[in-house]
Length: 149
Image (cartoon, rainbow, N blue to C red; front, top):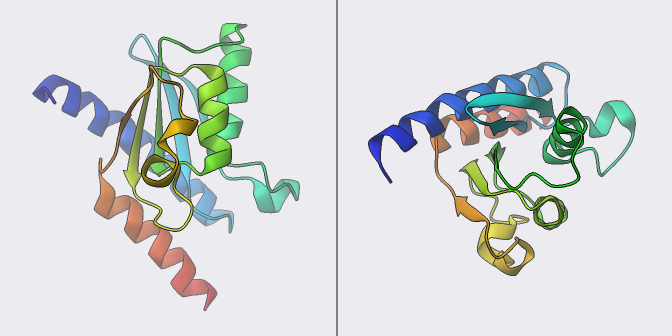
């Protein structure tokens, strides 16, 4: 990975972390997401499953809906999705349907993450990169669940 690309990924993952913190503050599982096109954030979201009483209201799903609405487009082939936790199978499938160019995630999800266990769910042209600000992302999740115990 080039230094410039890494700096860009770090910058936008920090923005996704802000969304994850907002979810934490709202007693939602702290996952945050931003979608970027042409170097600009076009969508921000975090988990809303508790608020909406909807198991599909994951950060990625909310962000994809916002991005397609913003661009008035069905597909997002020039976009990068940044998410603090590795997408689940449902979200990976939605990312595939949206034809998102790149997915950059923070920490892995060994129980439900799709990158490791179901990479075929992603669109064949989608580049998937993990481990960006992983420690920060996993700390937020761990802190959230420690509070719940």
